[in-house]
Image (cartoon, rainbow, N blue to C red; front, side, top):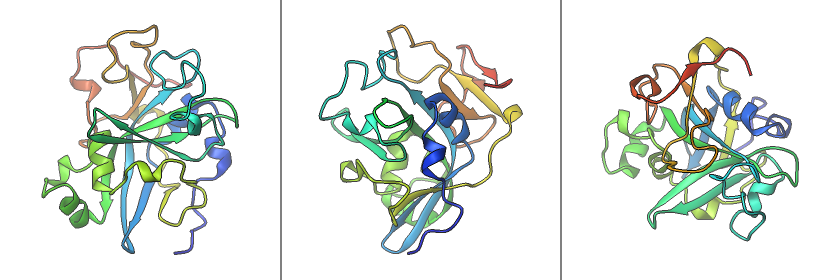
Length: 213
């Protein structure tokens, strides 16, 4: 399958992690599975930095596990968590600088019946509303770690429709109980979208609409 001209470029990813995390909202994540497109619109992301972010895998420096996070940008960083789940991240920043964006939720667009098969018959609203759910729905595992999203014919991102600031909310990242950045508003969400995993408009914690980064 040939790539289309509307793919996100390397330059898109080679920017500060926070900017990429916000700008990934509205973009289309595509997985070609047995020749069929499975796709979803990104509606929730989380930014993870390097040495200044205790929640990041890169906080303590380069290791065999996190080496993909240090670049080059535009690659998939996939890791295994809790002994049962995979999470998809997209590497950011310049080569050698750690940074990645966790894709937390998608709004399903194409290949929904296949996604349902991969998710054990779950309803559409439960297919991709969480980082482990979306990797299962797209049949992604650790073998995709290090995939070049700008070159792979089977996993890539398309431009989609950028989300205006008035439709974006920020909130603290999910599942962090300690650390200096646990309350930092580094989660980016499309306001009101039903596919968001943890709607900040239903949470008691601090959240706000973006007024510009």
